[in-house]
Length: 312
Image 1 (cartoon, rainbow, N blue to C red):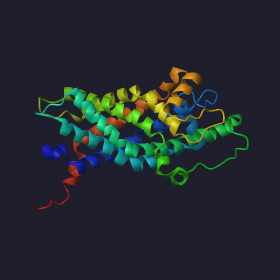
Image 2: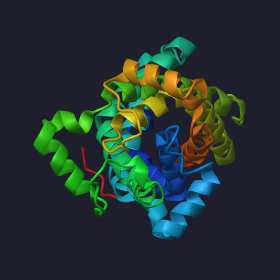
Image 3: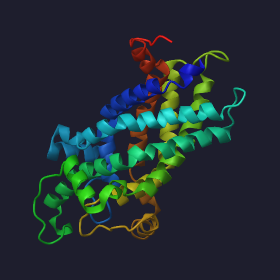
Image 4: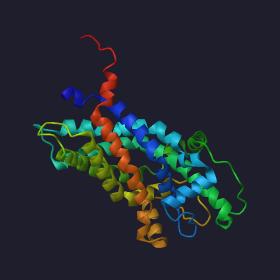
């Protein structure tokens, strides 16, 4: 049993499969969240999530809703794998005599959140540029006065073009712009999500030692994910604003976390920190529900069982 608990390859496979399935299902909502969060007063194109998705389909086609999905699908495998595997690793080593206190559960989540930003920050950095490109293109057509004089129509950049530009101009640090805000989002998220999921999941266990049914894991993952997502949404707004490289002339630019908070409070009010919260909850809930089902069904362990075992 202990070996299964700390089987890293299986957990990496589980995390990867869960991430790919989850992202494929909810990516359009994530795109709407990014565009809503990046809107500032005076340059509002979308009134709601549904309005954003309808306008995106009209102007960019169905696949416009999946702008930036390739980056997410490529990097979500290590991101989800690191998060889930790291949490299990820390929980395993913090458990004493089969017990894990709430404080230690939160510490395990803190460790998992800290580890994942290695992959999360560049993934989010590239994804946000690609997702927001459609908003800027639509703004260029509908609100030309909001763009700098002399702006010309340009093709949306690819992930590789953005990566090369950032590496050329700012080095590896360019891909880690917004690292502080990402840490401020992902560490508290994991500190809320993992303990809450574990306790909700325990309520549905069959007997003292039996595992919870898969549907209990799914519902627990959805509930814990949506709760943690809404709780850290203000920091997600800050992170999205900081990581956006292109802005209209009427939109604010930010030098850091505190500058971003100050300008949002002054120009848009406290409610701006809840922009995209509904979308984010809709993204995170099924994403983590699916992740926990894949994890607890042991898909990775099943796949690895077909590999030839080494003789001792």
